[in-house]
Amino acid sequence: MASFNKVVLVGNLTRDPELRHIPSGMAVTDIGLAVNDRRRSASGEWIDEVTFVDITLWGRTAEVVCEYMTKGSPLLVEGRLKLDTWGEGEQKRSKLKVIGERVVLLGSKGSSKGSDGYDGGGYAPRQNTRSSAGHSAPSQQDYYDTPPDDDEVPF
Image 1 (cartoon, helix red, strand yellow):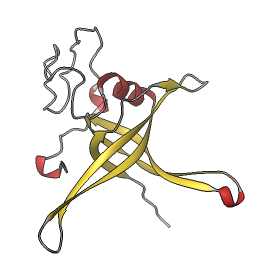
Image 2: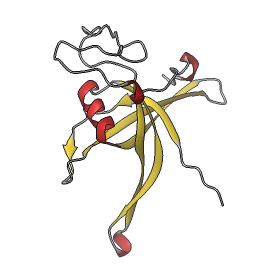
Image 3: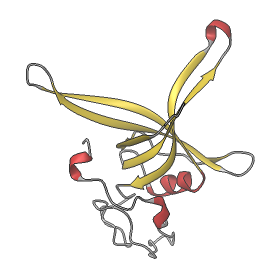
């Protein structure tokens, strides 16, 4: 039987990402993403609903998100669902989370327009540029080939 496990989310970070490293040296960060949904009720009123999703990012993806994103920054994450379980007997617990495999940075860290020419409203930093802090912009492989349409962004 075939199976398919893929998640694509667009939302805002609920807290500043914090980078840590596992004993092998691999970078990892856990982020929270608030995903907004707006729909009409039966009476015609708009209902806003927020879903909070826990996401784990690994390797260079984790490093890029920690370097460029802060609480409230918009982010697109593509990944897969994973069920974490812990505890024993009656104390057994589980939680569904996302393992992020690719990200698209939809906003910028700091001011509304950095020295790299990225104003936060576009799609990705220009290639082969350096910010005033001397950090290289993320490589093109960290982004999709085309940005999402404005109609697809839920906020």
